[in-house]
Amino acid sequence: PHQDLEQVENLVDELLAGETALEQRRQCCNLLLAVLASSGDWSKVQDRLERMRAANVQPDAASYCEIISKSSGEDAITTAENFFAQAVSTGRVKPTLPLFNAVLKACAKAADVNAAERWMMRILSAGLSPSVISYNTVL
Image (cartoon, rainbow, N blue to C red; front, side):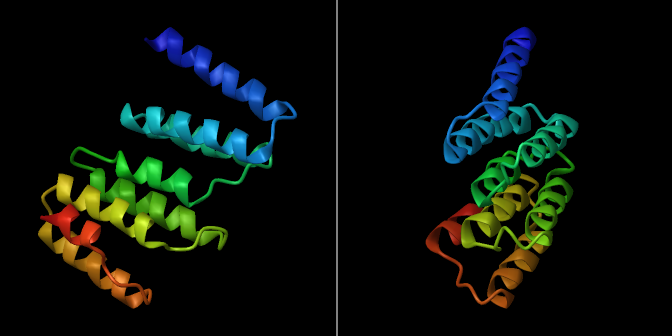
């Protein structure tokens, strides 16, 4: 499995260096980000984000939703919050409801009601309204 992942990473690197359309390159990177995040290898996730930027493929909200929604374990909320902050800090990624919902998912995985409440308030502060998905995520 490790060797297969390495091969996929190499293929994505080749794709980034090629002439493939920007959106196709971003989608392939997002799939790889999801796999790396699922494995919990956050340094590889960060490295992949940096490689994307170096190839002028800017991570988008979908990129960060893939990462944040995979956050789990005892550091799930911290990891989710850090990637959320990274996403919106550049101004290129707007704090959308799906992005907030991904953080709520991390709060639910960690069974942290206070964090979930804090993030629900942040949704409202951003001028958004929690959706059915938002509420179902934290139930």
